[in-house]
Image (cartoon, rainbow, N blue to C red; front, side, top):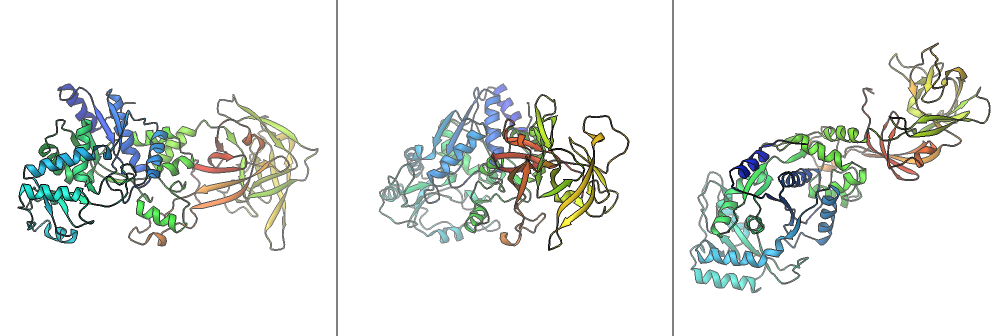
Length: 535
């Protein structure tokens, strides 16, 4: 499908004017956590734009902070991107360019565009001023080129401890853009790196490393979220002053934020540590690994991302939009009877041992299955009340008749309760003349419900996932104060035997949801069916 957006228009113009003859895009994650649905916008759009114009798509790990990074995250990120179907043409690491970055830092020193600062981080921060006050020059700003070269080499040689010295770009301490006020471009970190091991003890800062990485790889259009818009001047400054042959163009777009969902690494780490969720792949999270475990089809994510386009502004998006795409993708899944929280119904006038009712499991009726039926069946507890509450109640009640989907009309006659007074069984009668598929219009039932045969049905577990946060919760409160206590509920359930033999892992649980079969005796909800019913 063709999806127009302002970045596509820019690329088309660049190709038409001859500015570029080959498009190169990239997705540059920092390997310090797991990807979430917001990242999918950047991945899918960078990939799609490159492929639509016959270009190249890079995956590059921005591994410039060894304290927070780990090879585990690299493996997880690659798995997520592969799952999305966005195969990269080349795989790079920022650490591939550490030597080049040092050479460019030395070039800046030689040009009088960088200097070593001995001040601690908190002093440097205080000297930057604010939006109303210009920054103050560091007392080390006018060090000679020779002294700066000597000190920077000593930093690289490991002669100083962490934080003892930094290398800063010499730009403009009075700039209205805070990012231009002599930003730190190298810091000392005596930390083990997952790739370079202990070869380095100085590491480049993001605002210095990122534009160099793009330029080295020949990225033509460097797409990033709006939070980096104010960083574009320093991005362009680094490319220009480091005399890079290739000049990429940074373009910003709105970040994808999902309303009422948690995606921040810090918050998720807390949830994992507190045992609220199992890990980053918990199906209640909007991490890509969580969505994969939940069973969200990749095609639905792609359609969701493309339907939103690439806006120039930020705003929250409801997860219901993704759920609509999931329903569309799973619409042709085979239909099954799944009864959660089952309640026994004994049909007192049903003769014989039972029978098989043959019905289609799919919409085009090419996939048939036999549904067992006998004198004892299970229905959902929520489908029965003793007394019919109002005219809108279209399920079973005492003295009320309903249609069993694919079977017969039944009428509840009485109930059996336990010592606590809870209903454990319904006594009902059926009408043999109302068998599904026959032309019977003598009377209209009170509604249609589903069932599972008690004798041949299969006991399973059925899990439903809900948002982790209470709907419309005040996000200024601590996370633990706004957590939804019923974000995951597991039920005892019964399914018809065909649910274990029909092809594929996805099914439409009649009247309920689209579900995924995890194994022979475990199902979980991927997304609820559309419903106009209000509790």
